[in-house]
Structure formats: C-alpha cells, structure tokens
Image (cartoon, rainbow, N blue to C red; front, side, top):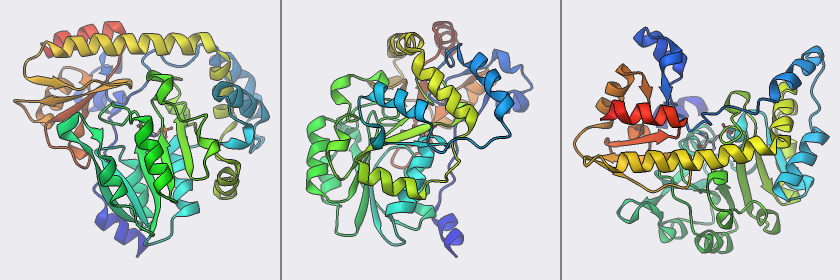
Length: 362
Ligand code: PMP
C-alpha cells in the first residue's frame, strides 16, 4: 500500500541523461558529446585519485570502516566543524536526505518544500508518505525565496523544511536573514542544502553555523566541485545530537572503501579543488555572457555551476531535443514542480565545450 500510494502521487523523476545513453540513442561516439546537463565538474576529479584507488584494490574483500577516521579528520579541517558534527552518506547527499526522512518523518507528517527546487525532496517525501506542503521561490522576483510562503505553511505537524541555497535549478542563494528567520520561527528541522555552495560566496555559507542550532542540518556533496558524482559521497553537518540520531539509522557500510579513498584524496588535493572553483566560476561567466547575446533567451544570474534560462519562443522539450541531435545534453526543466514548459538548465563546461555549445546554439 505504501509503495502504491507513493507511485500514485509521484510524478516520475527524470534525472539528467548520461553520455552513454545519448550515444546509444543517436548512434554517436560518447567522446563527441558535450554534457551540460547534470551540474558536474567538467574537469573531473583530482588526478591523484587513480593511484590511491589502485592501492585500495587489494582490500576490497574487507568491509570498509563505518566511520573512517582519516576522512573525518580531513572533512573536519576542510569545514572547520567538529568530527562529531558530520555524517557522511554513501549514496551522496541523496542518502542523507533519505536518512533524514527515515529518522524524523512519520507517515502523515508534513514537510515544507518551496518550489521550484531539487526534486529529490518530494520523491523522498512521497516514498515516506509525508504530506508535502508547497511554498515558493518567487518567479516574479528572480526566484527569491518567498519567506512568508514558508512561514505561513509551517504547522505543528511540520517535521522538515527544505531550503536549497544556491537553489537547483534557479541558481540563486537565500539571504542569511531569511534562513535565520525560518530557523528561529520553527522547531522543525531546517535542511539547508549547500550542494553548490563552493561556487558561491562564503558569506552565504551555513556550514560552520549549523552545529550552533538545534534544528539545522547543512547538506553538502563530493558530486559537484570535487568531480566525484560517480562515487556517490555526500554529507550533512549539524549539532551532535542530530548527527547521533541519523547515524543510528544510516546503513552502516554504505560508504565503500573506494568512495572513502576518493573523498580523502580529493580533500587533500586542495590546489585542484581551488582551480576547479576558480575555473568553474569563469566558465559560468563565459556561459552567462554568451547566452545573454540571444534575444530569445532570458538568463538568470547564478551562484552555482549552472544557469537557468527561460526560452521566449520555444518549448524546452523541443530545444533540448534539437541540441541532443547535435550532441549536446542540457536539462529540460519541465519535470521540476513549479516551472513551466519553457525552462532549461545549462551546466558549466570546459572553456572549449562552452565555446562549441554557444556556436551550436547560434
Ligand atoms: N542537493 C542538490 C541541490 C542537488 O542538486 C543534488 C544533486 N543533483 C544533490 C543534493 C544530491 O547530490 P548527491 O550526488 O551527493 O546525491
């Protein structure tokens, strides 16, 4: 019954397409495909990871450590929070979202989700049979969070409020004062999703502040700037009590040996990290300036590694299909709740990829 109910309510979640899938469908070489569809790091992961993975291969018959002390130490240094304030998920930040539901949300409880935003929140809510109460990011105001729409929808049944900053797919951050207001006016757990925070400015970063509150968890990931989407490592930062509850529920061995090695090595290669942040922001600017020149497209400003565009004369499905035929993957946003059928999200690429993409678009 639970699954049947969830399926009834659930619009299918269509994640971005892979290069392999497009290559199969269109009979082209995956090497020629430009993927700007899933907000990945076009420069990949730290080149130092390969050797470390090879060393680990001899140990694959042994279970991983549920809590890897080297990883916790590196993360704690990187984030400037205590090790007791961190939970690392083995299916990315998605796993932490799932564990939050498992831990804190009972059937029939309410969760507040402003839209348009990251689809996984409502997917998990449907699976756990929570009641979704929609709030909104205001389309008329460059998708700024409508704080009142959140506050007015919080009730004594609300268990979790999802705030995404920078927001996926709109790219804008949420003001500190707005987040603070929501945290202070509710006892519900406020999830501040910072999957893309590295591309933004530090003044909007709640990671260090989260452990000081008793109802905040920040989500972050290795899938974006660290270039490890394929390894599935994400983490949450909160006060020790919240982390302890979540750790009781999280599958104990979900973080594999290889994932641990990748994450540790990525954190130690700070030069590569800094380069990816800098070049990622440059790529975003190049993409923004290029897209601005098309009069049939409105480009929204972004603090993430993607840009949301509104098409004035074309539907997103047709636009994406035409680009696919030419070997470019971008994200059709029509499956996002709260957006129409003329929005597309375009991720950063290497400078060469952006140049080629803009030419194809012309
Ligand atoms: N939060 C947001 C806002 C995202 O866009 C994503 C990835 N699409 C995630 C969380 C999940 O990231 P992960 O790959 O770590 O599961």
